Length: 560
Image 1 (cartoon, rainbow, N blue to C red):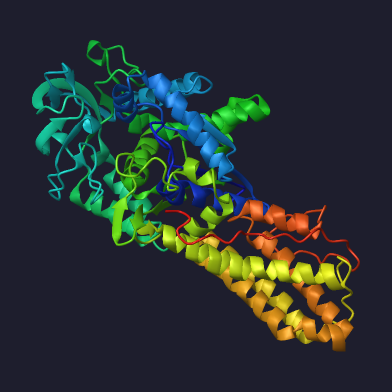
Image 2 (image 1 turned 60 degrees about the vertical axis):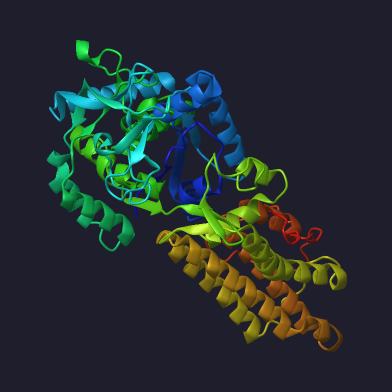
């Protein structure tokens, strides 16, 4: 096993609130995985933060009549609050242009660019670029929309086709339009520095092929397919004002900044350095996480970030020769929004602000763990899925309420009513009771194996399968009958149920951490065991807490 794990999520742009798609794709699975690693006793940190530089922030600032700093700081704080409200537990949530992180992040990014430049992996060349004559400025990728030259999509941004994931050459867009003024763009000449991705085609191919059988086939097939087509040089500088100035003593570099997708992944490194400085007063501790081959780095991303994390960022690291490449790049597809027969992509322009699809709105009315459970149950691991408000209500009621919560409540209520709220004696344990404990031990193995394989959807299905087994056990043992005919047998049944409840508390901890705490409270487990294993039984006579409903039943249409 590696000595340590470094887990990252793709940095959300600080130009809007997080929605269920952001959470399901890159954030929730990373949190779940990190919680599992820690339960297993591994040294693991979870690093994330907001992506504050670049075109997306400038565009939002122009739309809202505010400065990019005001926009990025506002949404950085809202994102952090919403995600923490959902139980996402970061070791650090930095920001590439936030006051507490800006100096360090700029220093790391400029040094990274300089090292690659000194090694000769950049090509400086004059190039043609789209220009808005009305706004009197060049138009970097996301400032342009037009008809995609790959698939004919009319709503394509000038950086990447959302339909196919392919890299776009903005100059090949048909009928390009400026996002700033809405007027047709024209072509003019400018100078930029291009990363020669073609120099890394063979090492990237060998690295990716070494991941066969470990990574999701869709991720590998996409990345290897891009290499087969030939990797183009990619401009790593931009003609905009908001970002990190290009660190070159060259007149042509004046007024240019680093491409946001050059500096954004460096945020993983600079935020790790900030965490080390905060914990140990020594930012150089980041090298233990990034330069030591005994650290396993795991990137969680959405499908639109696949090209950057499987090709561009690894090529940057190969050029720099200082940092370890990712052990795993776990890419999830998009989560759409379904209402009735209509399915659409979640977006700021299409999805109503008051919809619970936005995390901020959801948290005002509903249990965070219910959303964590549902988004894991519909995780878009191999294909796009949809957040369906009606399906959400049905699954919470039929699974969390009727199966999981029902078992916990009926067993603890029985103990409160007939055993004075204490753990009954186990002297009457039978082979059936011991088999139930074995099922719990097997559940730890099955759930854990799926988490380690990044099959979170299957893992939560195994969790729910064990909850249903617990209900079946309770029903087959009929403690309401044996209470009158064989009290020792009834006591053994309820004691076994309490053991199963403790197992459920730990099994659900990566997925629903607040539920784990609520169960521990009801068990009155002051010495809360941590670990990925069947917990030791609470002693006979242990005083239990007060039984409470774990999950509230939702009314039909509650999320509409």
